[in-house]
Length: 230
Image (cartoon, helix red, strand yellow):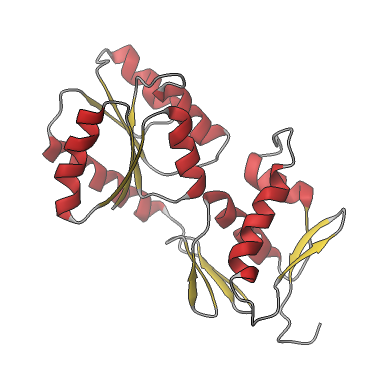
């Protein structure tokens, strides 16, 4: 499992690393809510372990933003000292999938994480999208160009899926913004930044192949396959 730990207590973080890494799991961690959201935007994880009480942006708000703004469906297990029914309900309503009260058993934590990942895998729709040299397995979140694995951000995967589903049709900026932010994009031109990052991965990393991501100025973007006649 690829596990993201969002926890500000260094002793707890060290304890989780000591337990999970020898079992073959890959871990990353952030000490703040904002740091955790940044990690999630950059990488894809199988499951997230989230502390309920974080400095600044607390666990509930991190979870809400994860679901509502990032549209991220990665399973979240919330670790917290808050043990009332009201606290648990708040965590689940914020978007957490499971709730474990401190102190907890590491064996139980591992079992719960496996169960969350298993359920997420069972509910994933394993559709494979293809166009030209590009393909994307939406169930496994694996993208490739000419057989070479592509490492994208969560937003990058969403954009690639939208472009592949439409290819070779043009996808407007409005369509992409709806896909990423459900029609409520940030004030800054974040879409341009995400398109730039996607182009770096699927085109710039293949300098000997013709580019596939085409910008139609002022309108949107589309994929092209230069190996066939246009």
